[in-house]
Length: 108
Image 1 (cartoon, one colour):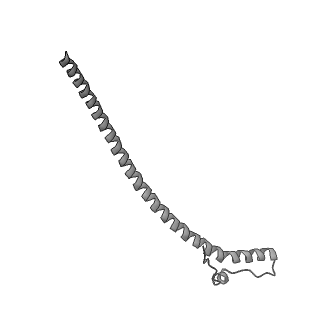
Image 2: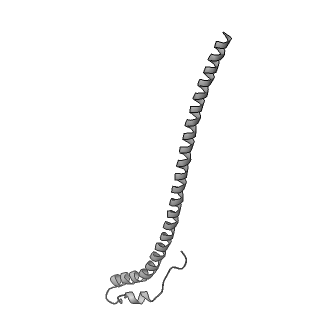
Image 3: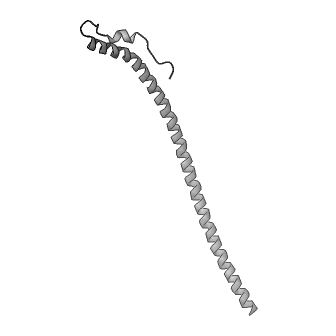
């Protein structure tokens, strides 16, 4: 009888061992999958940060251009409006005069 009980306990222990081994394999597979996803996310974040820096540089360049053009066109537009509202005694503006004025943004 003692031998039978020991055999049954050994069988239960082996069964538990197999179940635990399977659980360990499953957890290791989950961990590996999570690591793989984390690496993919890190690579994507790196690409996005790089793209953000590119867009910031582009935005800065565009802002500089807008500033230059607005300083160039603002006097022309105001003179044009004065001419329109001032009637025939006002002198019509010319773009070439404003182009030589050199109004550009220095601090953006």
